[in-house]
Image (cartoon, rainbow, N blue to C red; front, side, top):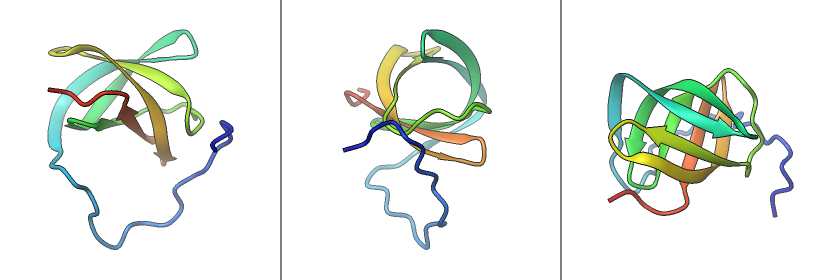
Length: 96
């Protein structure tokens, strides 16, 4: 069980284990809601189950967040990894 402590991703993956394609985002931003505050973030990629964003703060693994996407509205999720100002968000429900 995750207790909110930081678990950095320190080892690079040797191969891609993703089960679904990611849409690379070019110069697109989103709003990340974390701990009651809203932050403009750069959206790097998006899939039905999650997203990768650039976010300079250091959220904790497992923290609940909401990501406001310009074309899909508010999507709830949680932080699944953090590395070098990049953050992985897993959505609570898959995007359609």
